[in-house]
Length: 384
Image (cartoon, rainbow, N blue to C red):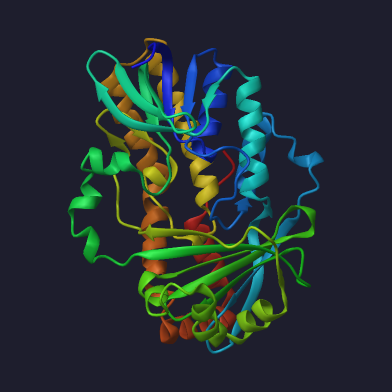
């Protein structure tokens, strides 16, 4: 092992939740280290739509959103495999920004705030006695090291090697028998509305499309893994056979211009319940619970979760609460703000992606728009 460094907080994962948390803690004058296995900037599978509930919070972190000329999104369109379409207003609305730009911008703010950001570095293990010991590997040069921290947080996204190391409960409860999904993302240029986020459903999946910066659109879809396996892993063949069944989606996919470096993919996505705390480590963002992308609120939940964790960590690090009290408080806050949203998301996930049910849902929303607004409110929060 190399020299051991000491910090107040170690954060595993440099996505939205991890970076936002690190900035907040650094502004409180805590010593923070973040482990990120990739190198900024990089693309990530994500719908790249953020609810306006996060606008003020991102500004407070130092992100100049008002100066970035980002598209504001105020309408939602939902289509069914049969071609039925519903369009309505989003109660709060949102904005589009790529993870390529957003994560890199937050990483720059974190560094300026004094955060030690270790890129291309993979956390391999976490143990705790009086303090947390995090072992890691620098993947750029193959060296290993360790850090000691008073507190530890995990914000590594949907899956990590640490889930297996910790034998997390969601992996033990028939995980392999549950439905797994793959995600595919493109950046495209197309002739589409600037203020609309569209959700196009097809058998065993759905595709979201909305504008991001520089006149581009994010086209991101999720489908059952068996759909891709049925075509030998050929994404193009699967799209033509399955996604083209929705006439709206076929028209977009055949007319858009897909930019270089795409698609970006991710596998083994699932929406089973997880714990907000594991072995004394606060779990944040998708590591604590993944909301189905069709709800359009995962990024805001990750950011909001970081704010909740920051307040709990501050109380612990300043001596106002014990480790156990911090864990209990964070767990209670997380359940209060997100448990119902995740439950609703899982219920929607079970309905959408099934042709008959989706056709019924979209036709009902078209006839009774107030029902759609109610569903949207159940999966979104208020400004925090």
